[in-house]
Image (cartoon, rainbow, N blue to C red):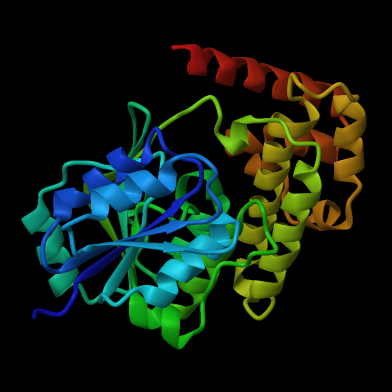
Length: 331
């Protein structure tokens, strides 16, 4: 039997409407060298039955269960993975119809530790390859990724060497509810030697109204803060990333504002919460590392306004961004 080339890990939780589509999209690469590990983490609907039925007479589909939580599910998948490479697929997303032989050729011949592909968000194309092709050194790539977390710091759409994960004991932090994938990826980046970008579109992130990042959660700020503190610790021995980490922190503040403080469902005073967040030590520290020259990053404009205590103007921009996001979702 040939050595397994790829382990596809799919966390599954109450996803009866989408899980089979996800599994079958992974089946695009269905051959003797690929295993699909579906990890149910506490589903109460028919997910379990559907996956077991799909796995009948298909030796490469493995169904297992884990404790609740997506991090526990992914860690279980890593524990069981036997292939040379690992990739992650969320249960409501799909792989594109990338040529199976092209992918197999890349995975067999690449000398890199991390392969990053372009991806789709709904019908929008996110071309990471074109944005990063001039970044040759690992340090410059990591800086680019930290400074653009919503585009780069997702665990999906990438291929990881199983040996790098297991030899460095890299796992998902189950104490984090948000940005746990970013934290995992950052630790992986620090341990890998070479990163490679591929121009093909491999992953499709399907937009849904029920997506957790689109649903207001009053604990959002506290949960993001946990992740920020952990990632700061991860980077402590790498001062070269200090400025990039500061931008990462402020991007997380943007997420807290758009999906928390100024979210429609939030009945509290968004302006007040913005001031509270901006007075946090980790935000103060990040603001000290940026200046007006960073205004070229459009998404930093509202938080730069906060640096100069122009909170009212910043709140207007956040409200406009929420309105724009809602209009996009209706299309």
